[in-house]
Image (cartoon, rainbow, N blue to C red; front, side, top):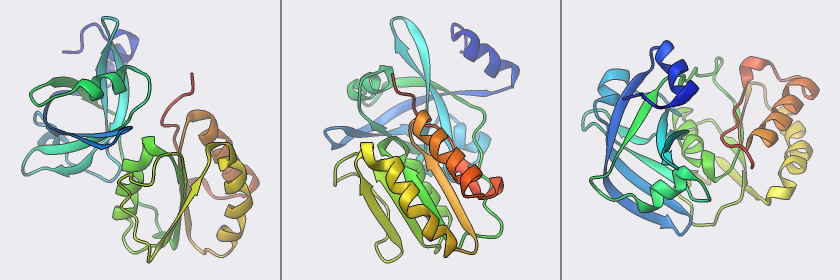
Length: 236
């Protein structure tokens, strides 16, 4: 199954990654630029179990070659062997495939590297920074951390994106892309000062994530085990 995937596929084989084939069962356009696909899992959930923010590597065809992109599982159902994926549509192999996907279509996927360690002590306040690409992970994270209040700085996307925030305890701050870093830097310190057990979670494009991750760790001195920063996509 993993033949022809280049050095990425070779490394994953050496790391004993597990391969699966997913089949599309339903397609839904949440917005013109955000598409949800439902899949049968090809045995994935029975083999691996589930955890919050769980993601898989999928192999999308482009110019005759497979290209790897990672996506977070939405509403995984181990008993039924199903889950959804949500695609923020833009240019690229993954979006092209998602736009055209119909029930019955299949795609290969690999599971290796995903994980989730719940912060201990439990967060007294979650401070998250994301964008449409990381919205499924934000929804999963907030659901996993229960009743903890959260502040979410969110860049881009329309008002009808499928947020699962609770206005009673989640402060969703919509921020233009050009202002995101400055807004977080101006507003985060006061929130950290008022929070005995913060948990900072950052998942934007690679450059923004690195900038804010370094700021939180080095300038605000938040311990590494209270910070998760992972670039979800790379600007081209």
